[in-house]
Amino acid sequence: MKKSLLFTDGACSGNPGPGGFGAIAFDSNTQSIKELGDAFSNTTNNQMEMKAVIEGLRWFANRNPTELHIWTDSSYVIQGITAWIFGWKSKGWKTQSGQEVLNKEFWMELFDLTQKFPRGSLKWNYVPGHSGISGNERCDQIAVAFSQGQSPFLFDGNFKNYGHSLEIPDHITGALPQRSSGSQKSSKAKTYLSYLHGEVFRHFDWASCERRVKGQAGAKFKKSTHTLSEEEILKSWNLPPGTPIKEA
Image (cartoon, rainbow, N blue to C red; front, top):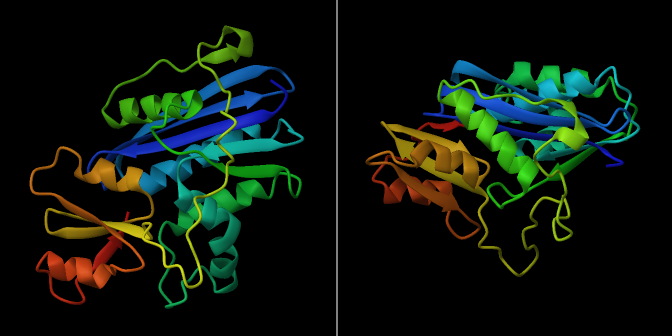
C-alpha cells in the first residue's frame, strides 16, 4: 500500500442515544494499521461520523503523511468540511438564518485539526455505506459494537498482519453522488425525514435515517426530492405546518 488511508464510520441507537465510532488508520510511511473506536452514552449519528474523522486525523497529526485519503459514507461530513464550514466561520459559526451551527464544537475541532496538515494534503472521498467495501464495513462493525455496549478488539500493528482489505474498487470514484440540474429535474433524495416518538429528524444520508427507524414500531420515513418537499411530507403524516425538524 502506497497511500495513507483513513476509513471512518459512526453509529447511534436512537439518534440521539447510545453511539459509537470506528476508524481505520493506515500509515504508508511505516506500513502500520491502527483501529480506533469508542462509545458515547448520549450522542447522534452525525456526531459519531465526525468523531471518527476527528480521532483519525488526531492520530495522523504528527505522522506527516504526504497525502491522506479519507473515506467516509457521510456526505454531511464531506460537504461540511469542504464547503459549508467556510460560510459558517465567516458568520461567527451561524447559519444563513442566524442560528447557531448544529454540532458547532465538533466542526470547530475538526477544522482546527485539518489546519495541522499541509494545504491540499487531505483528500476527502465518499464511499457508499453497506456496499461491501471492506474498510467501510469494518469501521461499521466497530462503531455498531461500541454503540451496543460491546468492547470490540482493535487492531494495532503491521499492515501485513491485518485481516481486512483496504482496497477500493475501480468503480468507486470518491465523488459525492451528483444530482441532475437544469431543465431535467432530479428525483434523487435531497434529505430524508424520519418520524419517531413524536419527533421529526432531518438526515443528510440514508444510512443515518435507516439507523433511526430500523426495527422501530410506528416509525415513518420518506425522502425529500425536487418534486416532494419536506412540507409535503409533514402534511402526508398529518403533522401541522411549522412542525420542528431536528437535524440528525
